[in-house]
Length: 426
Ligand SMILES: [Zn+2]
Image (cartoon, rainbow, N blue to C red; front, side, top):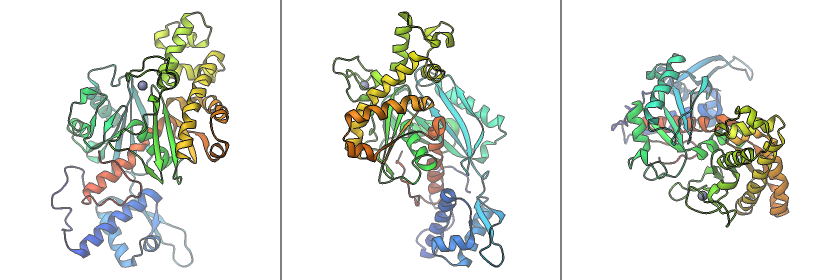
């Protein structure tokens, strides 16, 4: 694979305008795409799928092998006669660093071209709202993770970064975090890391992860609800991630649930986030415990209620703590009210409940399912499955891999974008 870097003005040596060369270029991109999405193939399988001759596919395999991107994985199954050689993307030809930046913490992971995680996920207690040095912290920590796993920077394809809040996909800027300034966020990270960096909204990246590697694989009309400190929505319509006009689609957490409710940080009153988000649950538990409510949450945080976070509440609930179970149940009931609106609008085949809350499993999905009976037209409800995220904490991190792979290969191959799932122009 070509080393990542600035887009080459003159392409990659095939030259422009020559139909023969463009055809070859497209075929190369198509083969990479097939390997990435479907895994290993024999030359005759590739001939069949791409409708090309054995000599032209063999020639492409030789070139991609010379570039180090494709590898012969040995002998495949024979359909009669000699057993054929089987080819695929060389997993370690390039690595992707994936960074999920949240409000109060961040997580970093490394993946290879087979989407396999290298080493552990590194979680750091710094996010967009509790430090001024998030950029230098991320640089230091991701370099440490690379060193720990003995991965050289020269073998990286690029960085995929997810951030919360409002991101304008046309301008590539954040409206929620002024510390990024008014230049494209990806440029800031490219300068930081010295490599291709791509930005996606956190919930949309999670939805993308589920669509490529999780429950929404092979499904077309699916909604993904991310419940962490906030509440976001990823929308897949006809197999495509919907961004909205400017990239602001899916602000599900800011629909009004209670006109008499609390002031939300967005400036409105009684948003779903003020009732059913992780932040709301933490606030509610702190207040009730302070007023004498008994719960093992107090024991988990050793009496310091400031230490309570969503994970504490979920851990307590998973350990049978009635107070924690009821908190989550109550959130589920309000979520159901919001979700019923989504079902009536989108008629999705499934709604995936993900984000930090996914660890609560049935404790969150059961009350949602139950209350949907109350709010949703029967025929529509019957059509929609409420399921838990398959990838759980990995959804967002994994969701950036296809984005980095696609966009970097697209850049290296003159922006010829052939992948079926579309990507935002961030
Ligand atoms: Zn709000």
